[in-house]
Image (cartoon, rainbow, N blue to C red; front, side, top):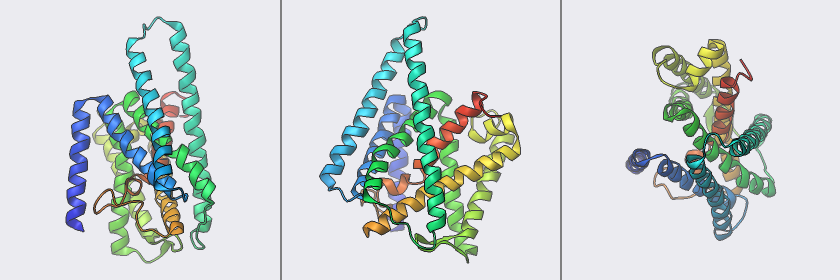
Length: 299
């Protein structure tokens, strides 16, 4: 199992590096495929057949990806003096930010529901599973693309690092010190000690990035520079909490469906949703937070 996990991780990393080297369109395209596959897996958890889930995921994810690509091509051709185009994209940008804001608020609502259901279990109506499966994965992918296009790859990596470090350090801290189960009815192996270890690790990593790698464009750097250390601690708490909720929400859906993994597409890792679950709420929230800070809306 460990050998499979390592091989799969190396292959995925090589694909990501190769697509990034080829260019922004290819990089975004590879991530689009990953999120479309995650959406397909999510929709199957709503009780839809594999074929129906695939059709919906391809139509929704493919359409959004295609429209985003056309908008990208259009922007490359626009005369900067063309006011009508500037107004059009300003309006679309506003709608996009509102979309991410609504998705983030819904994740906050799910977080509250998960917290109070951690000892009793979290039954989720299949209609809710289906609706969230249609709207949530595209929001995460669009936030990924927008973060990359607006702020650069280091900003994206810093956001992903928050999720990865929280997950890895929570695992090892929980293995070493975990005694108090965080969510026994949803994910029995997670502990409050693991959560604390993940939180603290992300907070420290963020301060290291902000203080010693200030020349890099990162989320911790932006927050510390604009609002100070306390603001970063609060932001780290929120982002890590959302990443945990994304993981727990998928665990609840899988437990309800009676399956261990969302699929077997990634040997040793399960499915794409298994790998992207924590990023579903974190990407929209992270991008929204960055935009609000840099625009001066908060801070």
